[in-house]
Length: 165
Image (cartoon, rainbow, N blue to C red):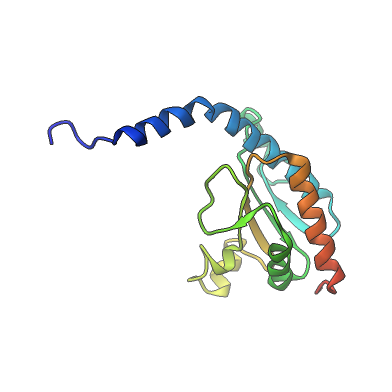
Protein backbone atom coordinates (compact mmCIF):
# COMPACT_ATOMS: atom_id res chain seq x y z
CA UNK A 1 0.00 0.00 0.00
CA UNK A 2 1.54 3.25 -1.11
CA UNK A 3 -1.09 5.47 0.50
CA UNK A 4 -1.20 3.90 3.96
CA UNK A 5 -4.31 2.62 5.72
CA UNK A 6 -7.75 3.64 4.57
CA UNK A 7 -10.98 3.74 6.53
CA UNK A 8 -14.08 2.16 5.12
CA UNK A 9 -16.90 4.47 4.01
CA UNK A 10 -19.09 3.87 7.05
CA UNK A 11 -16.22 4.63 9.46
CA UNK A 12 -15.54 7.86 7.55
CA UNK A 13 -19.20 8.81 7.78
CA UNK A 14 -19.23 8.19 11.54
CA UNK A 15 -16.04 10.20 12.04
CA UNK A 16 -17.31 13.20 10.05
CA UNK A 17 -20.67 13.06 11.81
CA UNK A 18 -19.10 12.98 15.27
CA UNK A 19 -16.69 15.82 14.49
CA UNK A 20 -19.65 18.12 13.85
CA UNK A 21 -20.67 17.95 17.53
CA UNK A 22 -17.19 17.54 19.05
CA UNK A 23 -16.90 21.11 20.39
CA UNK A 24 -20.34 20.95 21.97
CA UNK A 25 -19.63 17.59 23.59
CA UNK A 26 -16.26 18.74 24.96
CA UNK A 27 -17.77 21.94 26.36
CA UNK A 28 -20.47 19.94 28.17
CA UNK A 29 -17.89 17.36 29.32
CA UNK A 30 -15.77 20.14 30.89
CA UNK A 31 -18.70 22.13 32.35
CA UNK A 32 -20.28 19.05 33.93
CA UNK A 33 -16.96 17.97 35.46
CA UNK A 34 -16.41 21.38 37.05
CA UNK A 35 -19.92 21.41 38.53
CA UNK A 36 -19.55 17.86 39.85
CA UNK A 37 -16.15 18.71 41.35
CA UNK A 38 -17.75 21.61 43.25
CA UNK A 39 -20.59 19.33 44.36
CA UNK A 40 -18.16 16.68 45.65
CA UNK A 41 -15.98 19.30 47.34
CA UNK A 42 -18.97 20.61 49.31
CA UNK A 43 -20.23 17.14 50.33
CA UNK A 44 -19.41 16.20 53.91
CA UNK A 45 -18.83 12.50 53.10
CA UNK A 46 -16.33 13.18 50.32
CA UNK A 47 -12.84 13.40 51.82
CA UNK A 48 -10.94 14.86 48.90
CA UNK A 49 -11.49 15.94 45.30
CA UNK A 50 -8.82 15.85 42.59
CA UNK A 51 -9.71 18.32 39.85
CA UNK A 52 -7.49 21.18 38.64
CA UNK A 53 -10.47 23.50 38.16
CA UNK A 54 -11.14 23.90 41.89
CA UNK A 55 -9.08 26.18 44.10
CA UNK A 56 -8.27 23.46 46.64
CA UNK A 57 -6.29 21.54 44.00
CA UNK A 58 -2.56 21.95 44.63
CA UNK A 59 -1.91 22.94 40.99
CA UNK A 60 -4.98 25.08 40.40
CA UNK A 61 -2.97 28.25 39.65
CA UNK A 62 -0.86 26.43 37.07
CA UNK A 63 -3.94 24.87 35.46
CA UNK A 64 -5.71 28.23 35.43
CA UNK A 65 -2.78 29.85 33.64
CA UNK A 66 -2.50 27.10 31.03
CA UNK A 67 -5.94 25.62 30.46
CA UNK A 68 -8.09 28.68 29.76
CA UNK A 69 -10.99 27.45 31.92
CA UNK A 70 -11.12 24.03 30.25
CA UNK A 71 -9.88 21.77 33.01
CA UNK A 72 -10.93 18.40 31.55
CA UNK A 73 -13.81 16.07 32.12
CA UNK A 74 -11.96 13.80 34.54
CA UNK A 75 -12.70 14.07 38.26
CA UNK A 76 -11.36 11.84 41.00
CA UNK A 77 -12.55 11.86 44.58
CA UNK A 78 -12.24 9.89 47.80
CA UNK A 79 -15.31 8.80 49.73
CA UNK A 80 -15.23 8.26 53.48
CA UNK A 81 -15.23 4.60 54.38
CA UNK A 82 -12.60 3.54 51.89
CA UNK A 83 -12.90 0.93 49.18
CA UNK A 84 -15.88 -0.75 50.85
CA UNK A 85 -17.99 2.37 50.50
CA UNK A 86 -16.58 3.12 47.05
CA UNK A 87 -17.93 -0.26 45.88
CA UNK A 88 -21.27 0.43 47.55
CA UNK A 89 -21.49 3.84 45.90
CA UNK A 90 -20.94 2.33 42.46
CA UNK A 91 -23.67 -0.22 43.08
CA UNK A 92 -26.25 2.53 43.72
CA UNK A 93 -25.39 4.78 40.78
CA UNK A 94 -27.76 4.61 37.82
CA UNK A 95 -26.16 6.95 35.26
CA UNK A 96 -22.39 6.39 35.34
CA UNK A 97 -21.39 3.02 33.95
CA UNK A 98 -18.59 1.08 35.61
CA UNK A 99 -15.83 0.40 33.11
CA UNK A 100 -12.07 0.41 32.82
CA UNK A 101 -12.08 2.56 29.68
CA UNK A 102 -12.79 6.18 30.50
CA UNK A 103 -13.85 7.58 27.13
CA UNK A 104 -17.33 8.15 25.79
CA UNK A 105 -20.28 10.53 25.89
CA UNK A 106 -21.73 8.75 28.90
CA UNK A 107 -20.28 9.09 32.39
CA UNK A 108 -17.90 6.23 33.13
CA UNK A 109 -16.61 5.40 36.58
CA UNK A 110 -13.89 3.13 37.96
CA UNK A 111 -11.98 2.26 41.10
CA UNK A 112 -8.27 2.61 40.24
CA UNK A 113 -7.09 0.34 43.06
CA UNK A 114 -8.68 -2.67 41.35
CA UNK A 115 -8.42 -1.61 37.69
CA UNK A 116 -5.59 0.52 36.30
CA UNK A 117 -3.47 0.23 39.48
CA UNK A 118 -4.36 -3.35 40.47
CA UNK A 119 -0.90 -4.74 39.70
CA UNK A 120 0.78 -2.25 42.05
CA UNK A 121 1.57 -2.97 45.67
CA UNK A 122 -0.29 -1.06 48.39
CA UNK A 123 2.84 1.03 48.92
CA UNK A 124 3.08 1.89 45.21
CA UNK A 125 -0.60 2.78 45.14
CA UNK A 126 -0.24 5.09 48.15
CA UNK A 127 2.85 6.73 46.61
CA UNK A 128 0.69 7.53 43.56
CA UNK A 129 -2.24 8.89 45.65
CA UNK A 130 -4.36 5.80 44.97
CA UNK A 131 -5.86 6.04 48.45
CA UNK A 132 -8.66 4.03 50.04
CA UNK A 133 -12.00 5.02 48.55
CA UNK A 134 -10.57 6.71 45.45
CA UNK A 135 -13.07 6.88 42.60
CA UNK A 136 -12.21 8.03 39.08
CA UNK A 137 -14.96 9.52 36.94
CA UNK A 138 -14.99 10.50 33.28
CA UNK A 139 -17.94 12.88 33.29
CA UNK A 140 -20.31 12.51 30.38
CA UNK A 141 -22.71 14.87 28.68
CA UNK A 142 -25.82 13.87 30.63
CA UNK A 143 -27.87 16.65 32.21
CA UNK A 144 -25.84 17.94 35.18
CA UNK A 145 -28.86 17.99 37.49
CA UNK A 146 -29.46 14.31 36.70
CA UNK A 147 -25.83 13.48 37.47
CA UNK A 148 -25.80 15.37 40.76
CA UNK A 149 -29.12 13.85 41.75
CA UNK A 150 -27.81 10.36 40.98
CA UNK A 151 -24.70 10.88 43.10
CA UNK A 152 -26.79 12.34 45.91
CA UNK A 153 -29.13 9.32 46.02
CA UNK A 154 -26.18 6.91 45.83
CA UNK A 155 -24.29 8.61 48.69
CA UNK A 156 -27.51 8.71 50.74
CA UNK A 157 -28.03 4.98 50.14
CA UNK A 158 -24.45 4.21 51.19
CA UNK A 159 -25.07 6.20 54.40
CA UNK A 160 -28.30 4.31 55.09
CA UNK A 161 -26.30 1.09 55.00
CA UNK A 162 -24.02 2.20 57.86
CA UNK A 163 -21.17 4.11 56.30
CA UNK A 164 -17.88 2.49 57.24
CA UNK A 165 -15.52 5.09 58.73
